[in-house]
Length: 149
View 1 (cartoon, rainbow, N blue to C red):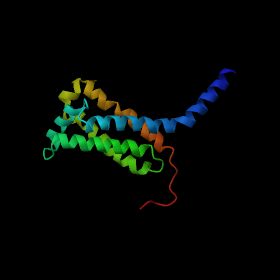
View 2: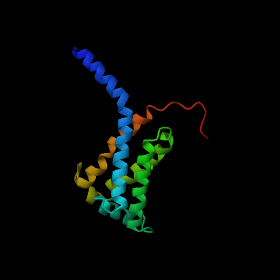
View 3: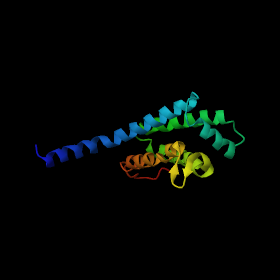
View 4: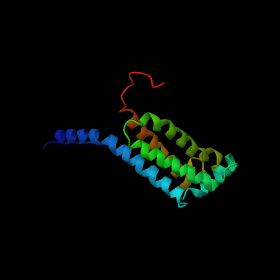
């Protein structure tokens, strides 16, 4: 087998498996991290608590963290159900906007210097990968023949 044939086999393998692997990757991350929040084990707990105290003082941080964890679990589950992509994408957008807020609202926690994120900041910035992965999944959707609304 020559290098061209190996290349073709790899490309076809990746084309066949990229979308399902992307769906399951998002499922694993969202369900796992969501469960950690629901059970009070998330290392992001203190960051979320600080964010809630600065933005939504009318809800207790503990309640918000559990609800946010359930929201993450919902997003993860919806990503593996074909046909629900158009439902999950707006939910993902809401989640990503919410998770990006600490970069701007809590800079003392998320940055140790100019363009030098703390561990918490790195945890947030990795969401760029989730955005790219979700875009890859969305790129496989079929165009609707009739508008939904």
